[in-house]
Each structure stands twice: as C-alpha cells, then as structure tokens.
Image (cartoon, rainbow, N blue to C red):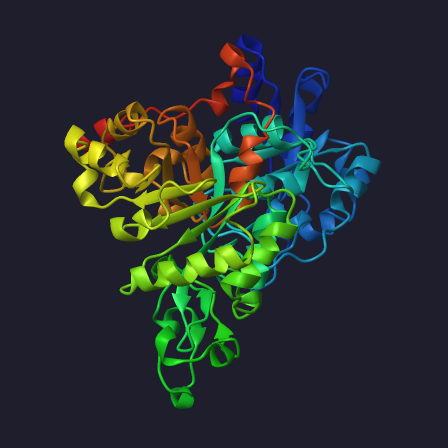
Length: 484
C-alpha cells in the first residue's frame, strides 16, 4: 500500500490520505509535503486496538501531541464530538475539537448519513446536524465525511451563516404549518403553535372541531383517541361527546406517522402541551407580529354547522374587519367555502380530491366558482411508483392559468416520507417543489426547515446557483429503477 500510494501521488495531486494505522502514516510521511498532501489519522471505536501501537483509539485520543508527529489532522466518528445517549438525545459536546486545534491538528468528523435516524434534537433534519458541527458558538470542525455530499455542501455553503429571522426571504412560497410544529410537539397544542411561530411559519393552521357544548377548538380529527389519551370513563371518544372543559384536561399525544419504520418524534415531549380553543388560537395569532395569516381547516361531517361556529368566533375576534392577517378557510366541501366566498381579506382554499388529478378545464373552472386557491398532496404534482418520481404533471400550470395559487402538503423531515429522488433530505425536496413545480405554499409539520430554506444565501443568485442547490430532475432516477 505504501508503494501504491507513493506511485499515485507522482501521477496526480493527492489532497488527503487517511488511515487508522500509525505505522502506515509514519512510513509515508517523508514522501509528502504537508503543504500539498495532508495525512489524517482516522480514529475507529474507542475500545478498538490500533495495531502498530497496541493502544486503544480512546487512549490515543488523549495523546494528540503524539498524533501531531505523523499527521496534520484527525478523522473521528461524529459521536466523539457530540455524544448521543441511548434515547437518541444529544449530550454536551466534548472538548475534542478544541484540544485538537490546540495541538495544531485539523478535525474532520465522519459517519454522516441522511437515511439513518439521527438525534431527536435535530428534528430529523440532516442539515441541522451538520450545522451543529460547523456553526455553533464553541467550535467548528474543519470538514466532514458524508455519504450524502449534496446535503453536506448545502449545509456548509448555504446555511452555515446567520439565518436569523431578519434575513430576507429569497423565494416566495408561503410557509404554512400543519397542526403547528407537530413534528416536535403534539399537534394543535399551545407548544406546537408557539414553536411554529418561533420557527418562521408565516401562516399557522387550526383544524376545527366542535365540543359537545358547541365550543370550536383545534384538533386534527373528531376522533379524540388519534390525538390524546382518553380515559374509558370520560364519556366518549369523539369531540362531540365531551364538553370543552373535559377535552382540555386530556393529555395530548404526538403524531408518529413513520412509526412503522421505527422513526418517532421527540419522545421526551410526546405528551406535552395543551389543546386550545379557536378563540385562543386567533388571539395567539394576533399577538404574533411575524405571521401573515391564519388557516382554518373545516373537514368535518358537520362541516356547515362548524362553518357557522367558526364565522361567529371570527366576527367576535374582529377578524372580519382587521386587515393585518389574512384569513384562509380550507375545506373539501364547496358548501363550506361558499359561506366565506367573497368576504374581504378571506381566502377560500379548496382541498382537492382525486377528481382534480386529470386537470380537466371544466373541473378547474368549477373550482374557481367557490375557491380562491387549492391545496393538493405532493403526488398530484410528482406522481410516484415504488417511491420513485415518474414524471411531473401539469396540474400547477393549469391552476395558475386560472389564477388559483397552489399549496402542497405534507412536507415532513423524516426521510421515509420522501421519494428516493430527494436523497433523504427534506430541503432537497422543498427546493424541487419550489423551483420546478413553482408552488405557492409549503404545508409542513416542520416549519423551521422550510422557513430556513427560504432564507438560504445560495438562492437569489440567478445563473450562479451552485450545483448542490439545483433542483432534482423529476423522473431521472426512475429510469434507472426501470432498468434493474
């Protein structure tokens, strides 16, 4: 191997050579100039034995001045730097980066993979993980070793800078929450809504249900057992079985839509927060200066009755007269939408079903009669087969031709919710829907990921858009799947 590496270096420039063996790096050190080729000592498991010294890698880590005698850098598993406990939560970071830098060694972190569950602290977002290594107040590694270089490159080049709420958006799509930040807290709770606002959602949503006493409140389903722990003696499992004072005592449950893949959401806070009434939701929205609107979702067997209750609360809260927040009323029931159609500062949002899939002109023109915009699921735009995107439909251009904005749901961070085309990276998925499909809104249970995407500094550069921020070509991977 020594002979091979030296011969290769005579034919081409070699920037880095890494090895987990001290003797090998020592034997080739004299054949390379440190200014041209960096020798990097790779640490394996802490209890594994390095063969030439018969010491564990854990013990060698305590003698970095020795490592400096034959290497210019170290490559360590990421959990050497940010340990993760058995429950998949981060522990305090170690001093390895600071210690290595003090010894004159560069530090590279390894084992970055998008399609393996990561710490819950990262909300299933691989870019957040990279940023914790290169963009925190205490240290920055000098490089990363990744199975998904597109994600690593975007994290470092596009997001490793000040992405404060003051940074301007580079693209237009609205960021609309799905039951608040329901990827981090139980949906439709005070904690989920507050986090959605803090995370940069521009519109927060309330799917309205009616309690037995007629109180409208936010919950994704009439079936309380889908969202809360309901005692057997409470008197029923549906929202209309219980009065509001009973419902507000229930313990919320976080949604785990990817549980069959052993992927869960923030277990430490799986029962945190409290459900809130529509009135409280509107009051919260009014006090959040960063919001541009609220979305009220009416999908209920008693939709018309719920619509009347919603209208009454909106009027009482002054939303029929204020202009600071747009009111979006979403439903798949045209009768519900007609109750709000034409009201100033109200937007009627039609939740499309399968009948819109063919995109016939008559269907779309009919929607225009009772709706101002349309919500579709992701597969209406990029159909899938075996989790590969097969093509792009023309549904968005047809709706746009009728001046109907298109909002798309649901964008989640868990990689199992995404097509193979997106490299197990939620940001790649969002970027493709924005740049290729030209959607007008992103409906997501992880608003932070979408809001951060809008502010990234790699957008808005025109033809200079870097390759790692280029959208995926829909159907490009499917052709390889067909040939297998």
